[in-house]
Length: 517
Image (cartoon, rainbow, N blue to C red; front, side):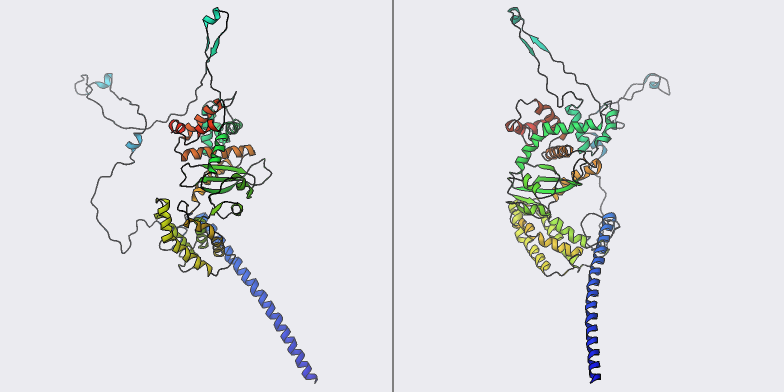
């Protein structure tokens, strides 16, 4: 009896120990799985950083499927199946030659002649006669900028007839108001400081030496203050009209980027960029500075807008009412491209490669329809693009991936953007990507690398207003220098600054198109 009890106790103990071992093994397996996911994710991050540091940024996989960090130039390599054709020699057309480029500039002729003793014959010593000249060579001469002092003299006129009758009648010639009173910042000087900062990306502290070399001793504080004042008094009303016009359009692109302001309580502030769709007749680009990246910023800025909004997957846009969001296919493709890593020869049967090639194929279709009218493009999308999209979503639904891996995040992102990207099948005016907004925000990002920051919120706001006017003018085919100069000279001299008066100074008005081309 005792033996049976002892055996039973031993069995129970063994079963209990076995259960504990199974539980421990299960925990270890879970830990191993988590560690495996973390290692996979860290390897993907390392590969992605290597690609960004040393590889090409262009999101294109070569036709042979290779993704080398240091790809050799194979443009001149002859493949085995290539047919070599001998081509007879021909004269190259003189396009883009030096002569063509020099012809665009005014010409100053320099005569090189022989005089006095140099014009005597070396054989007999008699005077030689000029038999003509040829163009020996041409070169360009750079003339540095110069500053002139414009002195306005106001003439006064008196009526002698009234004076003889004891009446004083005097009239004075009108003097245009300056852009900034009692300041060296004339319209042309302020315009030049703006062009240097926003076109050439030269910050105010680096402009000081340039202006001093021209004999004008101004400092960075002068430059910044002039730009803020001119923005508030002249450009802001134009900006407000552009804002009003943008919210009445049907299609808008949006993007945002971080920005540092020293006097802000926030570590990061943000520039929001909104621009017109490709098919809009009046092309507008607006940069709006805010201290938040929350949905309240676009909610307030786009008040009254109820059309299509192209954007990325930022959650703030999804909280906007009465707006139809259109997702960006380039962002979806980029996620699958990043999941490929920097492998030299990616597996063509891998899910990351398959997902990437689905979107690459769709972009190739869109490229063929780039110049089609909206109705024709919509018809082509329904016929050719929709089947590819349907195939991709079916493939995505059965895809089994690690949730925290690059591929898992790409699949999750694509699933979230499905409703937004399908909008391109409803309207041919919509773009397949949000690249237009990204190109426009890049203008600010490149400047930010040199400006580094703005000292005040006013300064950051004026940067957005100035850049908005400049980029909108460029899209309307204007000479930005002429346009800014024209605004700075004309608007301060308006008797009444209201909607009816300012509408004549919009970039697409006949008056501006005639004077600022």
